[in-house]
Image (cartoon, rainbow, N blue to C red; front, side):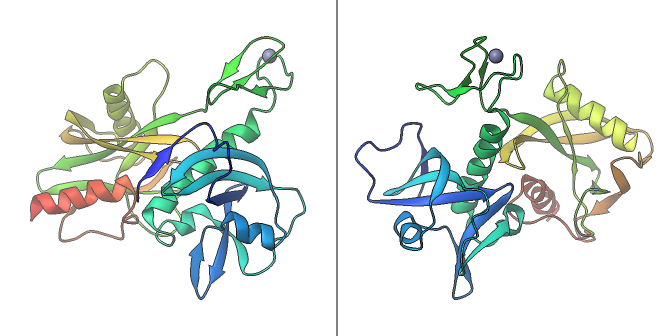
Length: 271
Ligand SMILES: [Zn+2]
């Protein structure tokens, strides 16, 4: 079943609706018989849970999908539970996970753009598109996207992997970093690799992309070849970096991430 994004909510009331309800980055799930599900509108209503600040997202099959929050100090009863969105990555199914990610991205934007960043007045939702308008000074804010590059650097039959200080757990991954104003994606690849591990890369080619809604990134994946230098870890972002062969990989990120897709691509290529 493919999710179809849409801006205007159904006028005459949908047959069914799924609610992606957030408290900061935690998503409300219903836990039935050990499985996590996204709460359905009728069941929420029957349980006395009233979503607030809703954002329409689109349709999954016949179900309308909404992002929302609850009124402050609302404690949903069991079997509802708040779960960190990252922890649901391999739990609720890919389709629901990516809709939840979209919901998290838009709720985060909605929450942080209630007031105009230029003049401080309250903003209003634009009626004709996904944007917030300041009636006082005219500023329009669209949902914010923060592009980042993520790169598999190859040296012969080996792949560069690093342990980041921010990673939870002991896994290694390919290098990544946010794009800065004024640079191309390729320049960003060269700068990030140079800054983080002190090596030069060449033959940068596009691999694919993936939304990364924690809260608002777009990961743009590349493959590049080693061009010179010795690995020198920056000790700011990275704890450790090294070259690994396909048969000697450390613990790597979860299947759903583009980081893992790049690593799997490398392994398949060596096979
Ligand atoms: Zn303003």
